[in-house]
Picture 1 (spheres, rainbow, N blue to C red):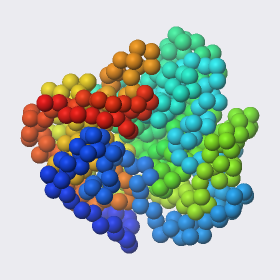
Picture 2 (cartoon, helix red, strand yellow):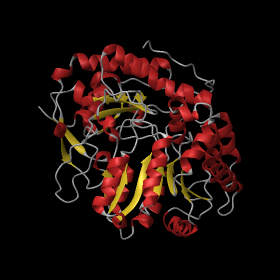
Picture 3 (tube, rainbow, N blue to C red):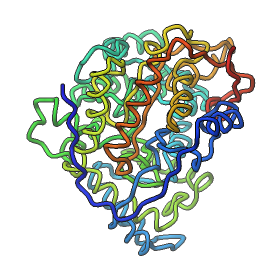
Picture 4 (cartoon, helix red, strand yellow):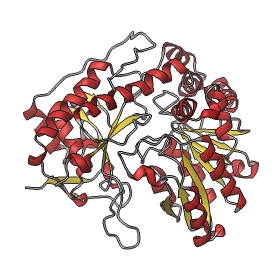
Length: 459
């Protein structure tokens, strides 16, 4: 398919100058960072695709809200504006703001996990997986088989494998399972969407066995846009109606608002049970701040209230998903493999196929991310074996189902020319792939090691 670029449905009114270091300078910076892209200074990066979380460009309406945000410690008007909008969009009675998604997980998951042994998801992302482990449970992924084949162009590769889910419940015992999580879109599977039909069936199974169902809602709007385009039942539905239909299946949700709400800071917890909400409030006061600010400033609450609505605009979502489709079409032209079809928030390049000579325990996804920086000053990240912590029981390295290099595209930040630079860099790396060597970890933390690990290149 010929690459089509959907023009930006906005004007750019402010710019941030970028600089491009020389290859020699980038080599030096990477060595100083111990070959961990998280340790690079942002000023030394040309195109930053490390994450789409908190790296978005806010609108003029959001910046106006920042100026008008109510900074009262308790009962700020910005808090009530946020709660009103969140209830309207998600249909939950109880909403608690927190400062970001992992804070939501830190507050909610231990409440659900008390006395339990397991948690099941279509796929856990890194922080959710870590918080499940920290709460004393073993996280289990249960994604559909199609997701494991990067060349398979199924519409909803992020779906829960519901047949396997029911088998797991019977195997481990419903009384031992803390929560069933549907991550939308499914980040670890390549930003792949989840159908409403799958959310409904997952909910039915969870409630059949008396297990709470939670939605990890970081990219709720992108997922709903895919549903509108691919699930026949919702072809004529609004994005907001699709969100309502999805979220009415869940007992609770956590959300990093730093993605689809297009803000730089913020998160939400949604609950239907007042009993759980009361526990959430107490933990929030202990860990985040008073309930009406949840660790956020009034200006951030106001920007989030506005961003929740802006993120539902279909013209914006068409352009947003269109950026991924443009990148994917260019990669198709060059025969560079990725998790197909294109996901919602980034392109997940199949590093296992681009660097087939590098074994999983030398981290091909991480290696490709570092090569992108060396080649063109592009910062990306591994979604693969490097990102996985060691097995909590055996302490052995764990092999991931994927070896992806994620190119996460910040919202309303980069233009078509930037996307072309990314593809051109990948072409150059592909053409010299056989010369590239992997890496070895020489220092790591026991949890979420990829954020702070130190590595050395193999000779």
